[in-house]
Length: 127
Image (cartoon, rainbow, N blue to C red):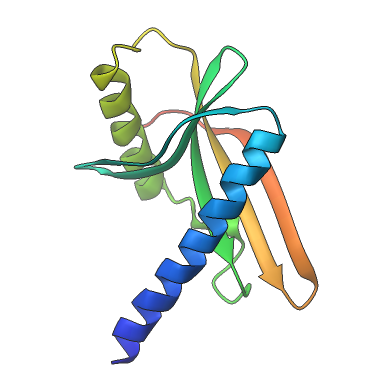
């Protein structure tokens, strides 16, 4: 039962973070194209334009640093899945020639309050 409750908690935390993330990147001038874009390789949390660049934004929300910072959750395996999912999006919308990057938006909510940090161009596409 603890596993089910943990999955529900993670879903609530993730949904909360993604809602905040959408508001945050819009305030930063990004033009949101899609949210929760699903592929067979996984999901891209946010796809948005930042000027001429198409950005694939991974959102990580944490309520405790017990499992590390939000940015430490971007493992090589996660990078490969995001790359493959991004390629699916680019192919679906015939955007293969677009300038792209992978951004990570970390949200930390703890006893010190709320901290949102956006890191641009965090990693290069990897297969």
